[in-house]
Amino acid sequence: MVRLLSEGLHRGGWDVPCTAAISRARVRLGPEPLRELFERVCRPVATAETSGAWYRRWRLVAIDGTALEVPDTSANAEHFGRAVSDRGAGAFPQVRLVALAECGTHAVFAAAMGPFTVSEVALAEQLWDRMEPGVLVLADRNFPAFPRWRAAKAGGADLLWRVKSNAVLPMCKQLEDGSYLSQIFATKDYCQCSDPEHVRVIEYTLQGGDEVYRLITTVLDPDQAPARELAVLYHERWEIESLLDELKVHQSGAGSVLRSKTPDGVTQEVHGMLLVHHALRQLAHQAARSRQVDPDRISFTRTLHAARRQVPAQAGFSPRTTDPGAGSGTR
Figure 1 (tube, rainbow, N blue to C red):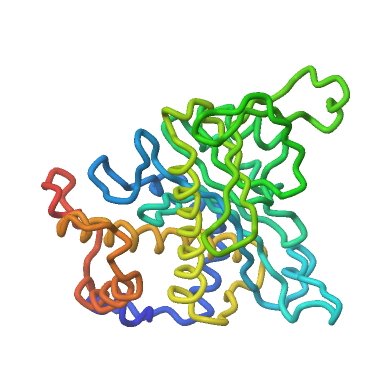
Figure 2: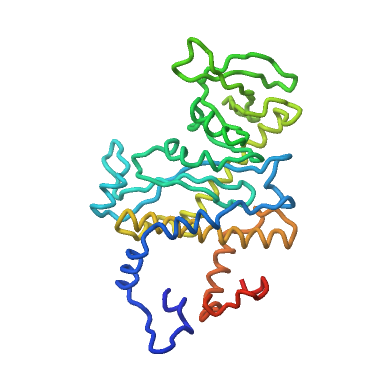
């Protein structure tokens, strides 16, 4: 792969570096540059015209987590830990990743990672400040809890989260669209009920099913977001599940294990994966806009294969020779 990427750069006796040289260079680089690059360049990509990326005035985003297997070295095992079940410990240590992404474009614009022994909801605390006004954040029933709800909405974002069936949600006021207003409290405040968070509750079942879905939202006015529309909208949360499949199965390869043998290397590698995924999703978004279709209609695997085929065409390109005063076509 390095030989393919560097084709055309063989000048002045320069040779393709060996695997060991690349590994040493990665160690010298460390994880911070790629982390900084991710935080600087990975942003939401949907425009006002992007189909499927919006609900009324809100940009639709979702939060969810996954785990990636890493090489079974003593450093990785000690730092990340591994899954344990009734059948024993897993074969590989795992790094846990929590992502915040646009539902319409699958573009990850914020992420937190840590040991497998740290829960998704604990890692999500690093992402609350990325939830800004104008977004509607979808999350599954593992996330709702009073302190997380309050922290997630503190920046001005609106929330639509599923809650567990045993959650205590007293009816304060029935609304015309079938939803109702309720309150949630901190565990220590259930007796006094002095510092509540006001929520709106939507309950529904799917056609032909018996399971009752319960959602809570910060959007208290049903005229702004009717209950039926929010019930349909919540299932956009599954877009982030498709995103994780793109990242883990198609981009990395089904059943693959990351290559890095140290925790710093793993952090560096995961940010590299996220950067590549974001670039691919930007390409897909551009293709969707040029055809005026929903980005969901653009195949991720075809985008990935097209990008791979173009790698030889970029051989010999060096940003050092790019004229900074040239037009956008040089980017």
